[in-house]
Every structure is written in C-alpha cells, then in structure tokens.
Length: 492
Image (tube, rainbow, N blue to C red; front, side, top):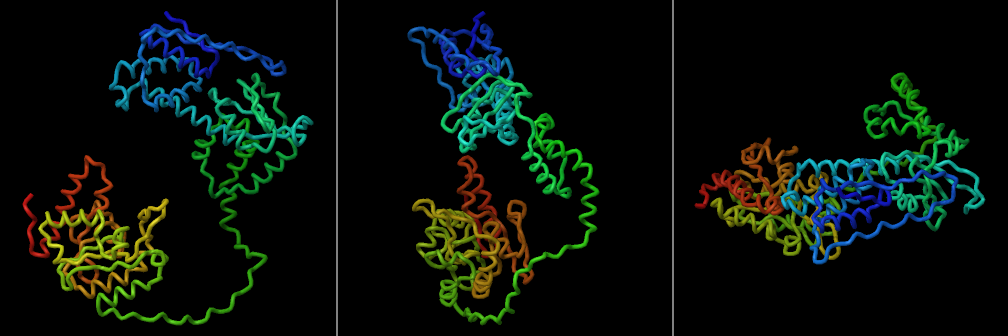
C-alpha cells in the first residue's frame, strides 16, 4: 500500500504532483492511502514557519503525460476544499479512470463523477454563504490605518478560508479586517493577506452599540406580508443563525407576522405629508396628420416617417411588404433583419432564403403571394460593428399594427400565415403558443383565417442534428397553407 501524506488539507499542488507520479508508475487507486498533515496551534502564538515542502515524487523516465479535460482540473480545485477525508482518494480514482476508461468523459450518471460534482456544489454553496453572512465588529487597534480593526467570526463547513480571502480583500479593501474561523484566521492590512492559526468563538469581539442600531433598522424594515419561512430557511439555514446578529429577531418577528399583516390591511390609508405641486391641466394635443393609405407607395412613405416607437429612428429605412395585390395568401414575419434593412426588401436574408426553399418544396410560388412583417423597422443592438437582432416588444409591435392592417386591406387575402409568435400575436390579437397551435387554421374576428407556424430563423437556431426534421415539419405546415393557392407540395 502506497502511503501519501500531503502538507495540508488544501494542498492542491502536492496532490497533483503525487497523482501524476502515481499514475506514471501505474499505481491503481486501491493501492494508495491518502492523508494530510494537521497541526494544533495556539491563536496567540507566533505564526508558524512555512510547512516543509512535500518532496517532488520521481516520475519514471519515458512516462507519458496524462491528458484530462480542463473541466476535471477545475473540479479538482474545488473538491480539494471539501471536508470529506476521502476526497483525495475519490479524485485520484477519477483521474485513473479518465485515463483508462475514455468513456467516463461522456457518462453523466457515473457514481464517482456525481459524488465529486456534489462535493463541488457543496463547496460553492459554502463560499456563497460565507460571502453573505460575514458580520464584522469594530475593535480599537492603533496598528490599523484608521485605528480600528474590523473582526468577523465564521464557521465554514469546508476548507474555504484561503479560497475566499482574495475576494474579501477586494470587497473590503478600504478597511483593515480579520476573519476568525475554527480552522484558520486571515487578516488584511490594506496591502496584503496574512494567514494565522485557528481561533475560538470567544476570541471574537462581543456586540456593540452599532450592532444594536443595525437590529433596530432590521426590525423597522421587516415586512410581515412578504415573510416566507420555508424560503428563508433554505437561503439562511439554521446552522448560521447563532453567528448572525439579526437571527435573534427572527422568531419574534415571525410569530408576530400574521397579526401585523392584519393590522396593515385594516389600517386606514395614510396620506403623504408633502405633495408635489399640481401640474397645469394638459392642453389639447394637436391631432397628428392622418395618412390615407391608398397604395403601397403611400404605405412606404408613411412608415418611413413613423416615430410611434423608437425603432424607426435608428433603422436605415422602413421595409414594407412585397408581392401581388389580391394574392390569396399573405406571409407575415416578425421584423426586417440586417439585410432587409439595408436592401429595403422583406425576407432576403438567411431566414428569407430558407423561407424561399420551403415555399418551393411546399409548391407555393413566392411571386403569387405577399410577404411582409408585423414590424416595419429593424430593431438591433450594436456589438462592435455588428448589428444583432433584438425582438420587438409588445408595445413596439402594437405601434406597427395599423400598418399591417393597412397592408391586409390593400391585398385582401383569403388567409395569412403567421411566421412566429410576434406575427401570430399581431394577427390574432392574443398570445399564441406557436408549438401547440402550429399547422392549424385559426380564425380572426373579421373572418380572416390564420395559420401559425415557426419563423424560419428558429430553424436556423436549431442544433445541426435537428435542423432537417425541423425543416420538414415547417414544409408540412406550409403545405396546409398551399391549399389556399390551389397548389400541391412539390415531390420530395
């Protein structure tokens, strides 16, 4: 049996060196016993000298290097901080298996990997709770920058003091502080971190007047109507309560919550003591000029000047529908894309090209239909020099609705095809679950039939292995719409 003794509980470098050497010598996990060196030290003793470095193990000449996923190295860095004594044995066993069992990388339910991931999750949760529940108390100390040392006591579940210290130094960089734990202490003097021996609860300072002020504030902001005890216990487990000053109030305030909520409901409404000055009554607004839309040219001119929502101000131009007036079928998308905005024509970008291919397979001649969008301007977000599509809000789509209705009045179609949720909502006046209602005819209040399906851009965002099946389903939906034109799908 190989005996491996690491320099400390978080000796990551020692573990990696020893594991590499053991792996190179083909020592199986069951033949290795891992342990760590621990020392009992007095809080007030001089800081101990640095631990003797673990001698670097000798790797046999010609041994090949073990290659493991980068995610496993990050997992090791976290699991080493766990309190479980068998963690090093588990990690070396996983390392051994990753080298000798390549299939382990793709096994999401392997018991060893699940155990390591659970340990990592527990460590991350402990780090999160320590950040949330640190409570500092001031202690006079003339050796500090402001003559005050802020001291906190915390009882972590795992070996996380060294891991969290840099975060604390960055978060509380403006004050001198010390954190005491049963395992280790750490101090920040404004320039560097110093680690010391374990501490005892009685070494931490007692409550002061400032803490009583904090409790008064906590009591005053407590809202009984928003109390959710189960959620509170989940986010603030009881094991942390004895170190939190506000915890002494939880039982009292919780017991009074129902009574205080009733008092709040029954109380008369209170009027504010100070009111803003009254504004003068609004003057009747000058009615906006009414655009009479008698042709597509009128629509193009009117939409170009439209500023009913902010999108039009930033777009290159408005993009109205194109196709044959009197067409039996109108296809309605969401909004112009980058290429549509630059060229001034609907459905000419990648999604439009995919729509053309689907129309052809469904037996629909694009020249015989009308294609437009629910929103007439391109909404985007700049990332460097690229313009990234952003979905229009309901308010923006509603501002464009009358332009879409003007188009329908000019075309007078027998039916519409809504490409995606935005188009479906504009045509039907309600939220539409596209995946549930796709491929079937719905009827508007004015009798116009609407068929709902996916937007072609949704097909482009699918994983590569799903795109063919998604495209075939899209063509089937369009095949239902083809019945309006009297066409038949093209043979597959």
